Length: 274
Image (cartoon, rainbow, N blue to C red; front, side, top):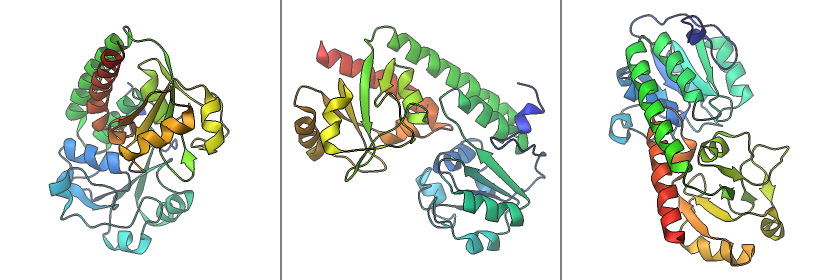
């Protein structure tokens, strides 16, 4: 990747390299984890309440509300030099308010596992962690290769991936989650959607043609008790399984573990069906 290109964020903004001692606020849970994995934890001065990894290290980092309801005044009181936001996670209003009052606002938008390469490069270039960024890229490539090998032995699937209950919500094919599953040859349903996270009526679930239903552990905490409910709604023949939502939806450094998890998960599912 061109060195100058590394400094361009998902909003098309070209950033400069941060001065030593940059004060960083992360409003994106998976990027908060990434910053710590890039040895930038000492410079993280604020986070959201959903930024929970690494758990112990974050206990002393102030919470600034949620990803959608950031306490802007509390954030500004921390005097950050850099705030990191995400197109899916944070609101346009939050971005606009920060653009006016914070020196540097980095916009991120990974939409598939390979997009993490540009994310690592951006963080590495801005915060002087380019060697660590390259190490992450190399490890990600290994994980992607392993998933590709696992996928070669799998039959294609049509997957209903549920993230919410009352109402039922799933993911469109242009989301990070869907693109993570696609590395296994699993295509999410519905095939087409005007919304990235469409609501599906209970009576419509069985019409989507899914041959596998996955219940994510987040943002809705699906548990074993929900499996029977979904089996009944889908007609009983469609397998319904729980899946670790963090491993499928978190990007950054978690994407590497997520790809390894998916390779193991698909292998176990395949073996149980044999």
